[in-house]
Image (cartoon, rainbow, N blue to C red; front, top):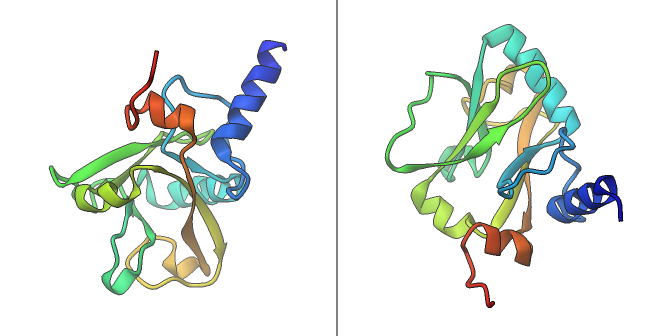
Length: 157
């Protein structure tokens, strides 16, 4: 198997069958906990041009449901109760940090999240609200290799 085939297979395993392919084709040494679809990536480029650098915080519920909330950097303050899930790598803009509260992360730590965008107006304070589109999360369970690489299962050896 060539390195390119190995990389493609690793990416297919990482993305999973029920989540759209991420915008970037690179496979990270440490498994990603979060990715972005090509449609959402293109939308983020447009939103960044309008509003400057962006970040996400995965809402834990209440009036916003459980939605990825997108804010200009500095608008939403993260703190010690938040977990940095990773950065979205989108061509043409700075990496976009993605956070979730530590208590919510305890429920989601075995899950890979992919940020997507769909037509419709979501409720809440997320920056895309006036655009007639809304971000949503597509999720899948981490596979055995990802769980081991993230230290979530004991490895035998």
